[in-house]
Length: 242
Image 1 (tube, rainbow, N blue to C red):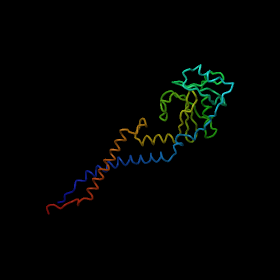
Image 2 (cartoon, rainbow, N blue to C red):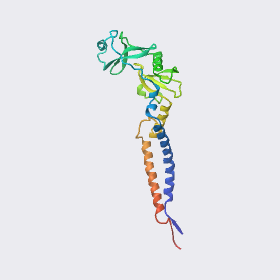
Image 3 (cartoon, helix red, strand yellow):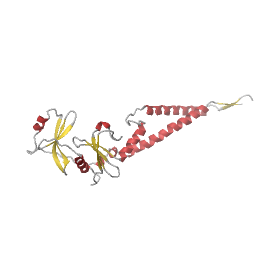
Image 4 (cartoon, rainbow, N blue to C red):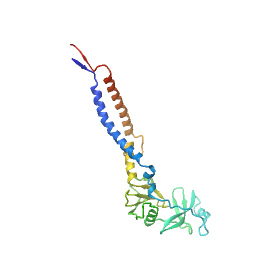
């Protein structure tokens, strides 16, 4: 009669673990490959916009910094800059307060309120992929898309109908570009989510699911080592009761 070494159950465990761990290994390989293939500057969308900032020099036509300070004594910073309005660069003071920011006309110190057409003009002025007009301008105050951090609300969103489905997000107070999104960034975000296995917030690199698969991977290696041990040890069967 032949007596078999009890390795069958180890082999069954190893096979099932190979399926579970192997599938995730494929996901990690694909997602990791995507993330290293593209330059981060491209993913961040640096190619989508051009730098239109230019130094502004104070002239007698402008109100003084002291005048601005008198109006807003609690301002944390005051900057003389320019903004694209009415198809031209307009001088403004950017006043940063503790909880918000605002723009003042540099000549009158009147607050500058930006509407959708102003934001459209700013977006088209900095857009760097041709003279294509913006397709849509949206005012977002709640329920942001997954590509946008909710902490940035409220914002203006400007979409362009280009190859990458570009979306530019702007501050409603200052018209500053808040962030940029395009198809390859969105793909990167999905790959990152799959890589760290955080399918909700997409930020937790120590998620319980990721930890679980790391543990499963170690168990997979242990079962494989046990099978190797059974394979290289003495013959698997022994003749008993000739």
